[in-house]
Length: 227
Ligand code: ADP
Image (cartoon, rainbow, N blue to C red; front, side, top):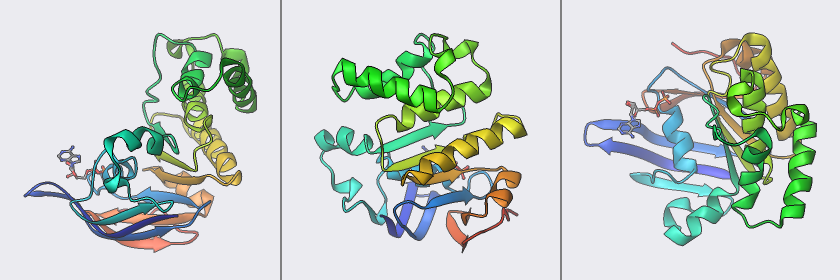
C-alpha cells in the first residue's frame, strides 16, 4: 500500500510543489495522475522513489517510511519500484538486451538467471527480435517497450511512469498502455502521470487530478478533466 498523509513538498520558501496531499493507493491499483504542467505530478512520483523527502507529513510505502531510510537502505528500497520516463532513458551504448540485463546485474543476480529472465521478458514484450539493436535503431514504441521491460524485469511491486506516451503517436501510445495494463494484471501497482486525454478517457481507471500542488479530484473510472 502507498499512503500520503498530509504531505507537503517545498523546494524553497516560495515554491510549494505539493501541499497537504492525502492519498491512499491499494496494492494492484492502476491510477492516472493528471493535471496542468507544474501541478506537482512529477514531484509526487519522485517522492515515492525517495529522490525527495516531504517537507511536512508522512509517506508510507509497503510498511516502510522512505524518508526514514538510511542511505545504505535506499538502493534496496528503489529496487522494489520500477520507473518509466517519457524519454526512455536507455543507455545509448548498450543493446536492448544489455539495457534490460543491467537492471538485474546491479542486484548481483547470477548470469544464467539473468539471461533466462531477460529472454523471457523480451519475448513477452515482443522485442526479442530487436535484442541486439542499440536504442537509436529503435522506433519510439520499441524504445518504450524496452524501457518498460527494464523497469519490470526485477519484479517491482510498484511501477511509476512519467508521461510514458508523451512522444508517441496515438496507436503506439495505446500499445504502450496495453503493456502497462498487462504489467498491472500481474499484481503490480501502476501510477502513471499523463497529459493524454484519449488514453485516460478510454481506460476507465481511477484518476487523481492535481492542480497547484493539491488534489482537486479523485474518481474511480475517472475522466481527463484538466483546466
Ligand atoms: P508537473 O509534473 O505536474 O508538471 P512538477 O512536479 O514538475 O509538476 O512541478 C511542480 C512545481 O514544483 C513547479 O512549480 C515546478 O517548477 C517546481 N519544481 C519541481 N521540481 C523542482 C526542483 N527540483 N526545484 C525547484 N522547483 C521545482
